[in-house]
Amino acid sequence: MTEAAASPRSGSGALTKEAIGTAARRLFARQGYAGTSVRAIAAAAGADPALVIRHFGSKERLFLETVAIEGRFDHVTNGPLESLGPRLVESLLTEAPEITFSTWRAMLRATDSDLVRSRLIAAMEEMFIEPLAPRLQGPDPELRARLVAAAISGLLDAVAILTDRLIVEASVAQLVDLYGRSIQALVDG
Amino acid sequence: MTEAAASPRSGSGALTKEAIGTAARRLFARQGYAGTSVRAIAAAAGADPALVIRHFGSKERLFLETVAIEGRFDHVTNGPLESLGPRLVESLLTEAPEITFSTWRAMLRATDSDLVRSRLIAAMEEMFIEPLAPRLQGPDPELRARLVAAAISGLLDAVAILTDRLIVEASVAQLVDLYGRSIQALVDG
DNA sequence: GGTGAAAGTCAACACTGTTGACAGCCGGGA
DNA sequence: TCCCGGCTGTCAACAGTGTTGACTTTCACC
Image 1 (cartoon, chains in turn cyan, red, green, brown):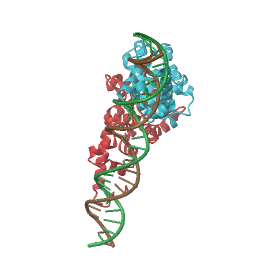
Image 2 (cartoon, rainbow over the protein chains, first blue to last red; image 1 turned 90 degrees about the horizontal axis):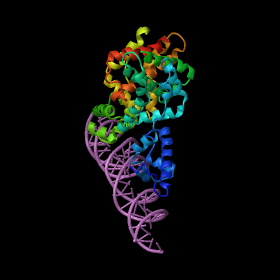
Image 3 (cartoon, rainbow over the protein chains, first blue to last red; image 1 turned 90 degrees about the vertical axis):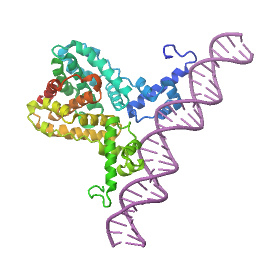
Image 4 (tube, each protein chain N blue to C red; image 1 turned 60 degrees about the horizontal axis):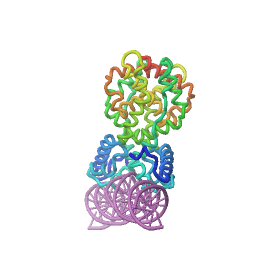
């Protein structure tokens, strides 16, 4: 609530709220949910810790409002089915990859919280399963769409979390070819 | 250290250490790393919180000693290559699945800690990549083995974390067929 | 019986997220 | 003009966290 109407007075409140959000996004992405304290966010934003809670309700809600998965993959999921696997991998690896990966890392680490977990599920549904399932031909289109999402989460794991030695040395082209073909097997059914 | 030699005296120390370990394993699997406190573990084991630290060094080390990925997949990775994908999926889904999944969940959530993260990487390397890479034929065997590991981590994510609606209604046979075939594409290259 | 080390206990430290009481500012109504 | 009311921000405090140091107890061995 008290969302729609812009701040009725000076607006300095909205400014510091934005500063807090910016600092939170940066710190959460860099150090994870448990690894960044409300006090650290407040200090980085030049604000009082109590003000952080006052503005966002709780650390958990601040996290949810601040680090959201917002990748748009419509152009991929709407494109031709016969090349969907490779195009999906390429899109994941090249379009704003650092945001995608740090966000994935931060959210996965925070799945202790049921709120974060269900938000993550919803994002996967919305971004991949819902646009994909109705388009797949053959048996079990819904399940196959969900398995595409699973394969994607595996790729994100490999790059964002198991990072160090898992995939680093490969070129994007190799990954697009190999992993893309593997995903394509799910698309083709 | 002080491991090899059995406790030189009464042995009651080893007993309570084991009780602490058992309680920790149960609570970590159920509530995750951040969600279980040292004091809760101590209470469940009927011991003093300070004793938990004294025995294991830190909460982090207790976690590492207690919830280890110990799945043995040699029989799968050593088996015939042409059916490796499906056999891998079946083995993951049917052999002690609750342990596998709760462990995966707990470890992934705890990857804030670099120790846990590198342990997770080491486990994936040891269980899948090292036995698999030398056996793969064709180009980039190492990379393809790593991508198999990525696909596996995606399946674990889907079942262990995104659980609720992602895959639940599917039968093991369907998953073995579909996802197994997708992994097989990586094996075949 | 005395010794020394292990096992266990207790209180405290610095830190966390969160809350309530308080102060300052500033536009709008009298 | 004054005063009111509601944001905006500040401060101290709460309960809970992991961890540490000093302490007592216990018991095999010389």
